[in-house]
Image 1: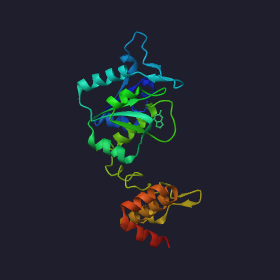
Image 2 (image 1 turned 135 degrees about the vertical axis):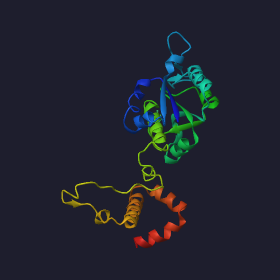
Image 3 (image 1 turned 45 degrees about the vertical axis):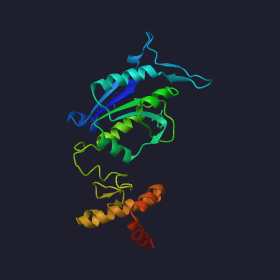
Length: 243
Ligand code: 6GU
């Protein structure tokens, strides 16, 4: 998968893709991330890409032309399945969206907003999808774009060493992940749960599911509600067990 990120502060994106899993995905040629400086597409000699908003009070807005020119140049080279605009008023990002993008896209453009946003006409004309990472406002879309790219790349087949490890992430089955332990067996008087040392695989899986359920019920009743709707069979056994 290829991800092209367009930004007016490209330096903000130097580091996230040069370490750990994302670096490895890049080294294994499973993903490539290219960052483009929007200022290079300014159509004036002062390199200006923003201007005052029409109407009063709204602040600076990124102009349509630099964005259009940059995306057009990219589209001349290859087809893009999605042109995503990162914006706090977009659809809230989640694991399902990450999985979907990962499965269905070969090439993606991610456009980062800044200031008061981008000219609405670009959104209407070129953008295929608008994504937010949550209900709070960041100074720009760069960190949000890095988050989306990370979540999408890590679920590409072959990126994680152990193929099953993305499947056991929190959210993949609609539940939070269970607790995990490593050595030492006893730490500050706290023991690792016996079941994990038993070697009894099916019992361990059962314990993990129970812990996932408990954690989800306690911390994310909204997720638990959705889980029950998707698994009508679970409702009975779990509510019986709780009694
Ligand atoms: Cl995508 N951009 C900005 N600027 N703020 C955000 C966001 C995006 N998602 C949540 N807050």
